[in-house]
Length: 303
Image 1 (tube, rainbow, N blue to C red):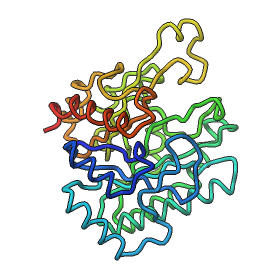
Image 2 (cartoon, rainbow, N blue to C red; image 1 turned 30 degrees about the horizontal axis):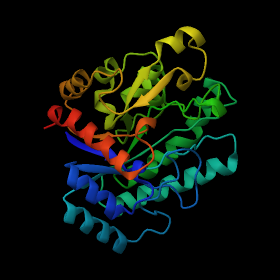
Image 3 (cartoon, one colour; image 1 turned 120 degrees about the vertical axis):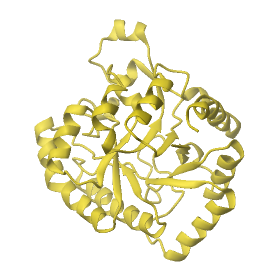
């Protein structure tokens, strides 16, 4: 396995500066954020470390040279929009740009990109699955034609303004099974983040054994359930009203068991720290510290 981090935490830095920090701390790789320029749809969204809109082979060669300079690889390109949004313009922008991200990853000679399925928050599960069946097979065929894997992150995106369904269909093992029945392609899989299962009060480790061969990429974000808030508010409120995102080691996920489960199923890909911990927001020093702490937690588990 390779230890990396998601570049969104350094959204105010240039890619070369991000690679320099990664190299200095000791990370092997980074997942590079690739939103369309000027699209800031939420916190940690809208980060453009590689602009894929008119991406050329010359630009790709320059980026590969930077990676070689700092000895830090790119684990994948990341773009997490809502391709099934109730807003058709938003959905179309997402569907178009995800293809541009696939094209850019091809020029960079990468094996995959990461994204969301998306969802219409005002429709039922069954209606969202029908929409998924209309939209996503074509996108995955586009990726297949370019030998590019697509990893879907399992974040429900259930926040106050996306309540009650959330902005991402791919949130539970039951739904993953149905998705993979519709699209059995070996180029369609998961960017697995255990924190999102813990947030839903589920076992974050057991699904690794069922879906291990579908895991293309992994995020390492921790989650802490606030038991007092859970007891006071119940489980039927937006999950982040009773949960707190933390860096690895400061939440409820057992990272030894999680990395062990990945090893058990033969996973040998990237594990990328995703920092969304409010305790480490603000200054560049605090954000870098979050990555240094995460590195010390995970490096002993990832040779």
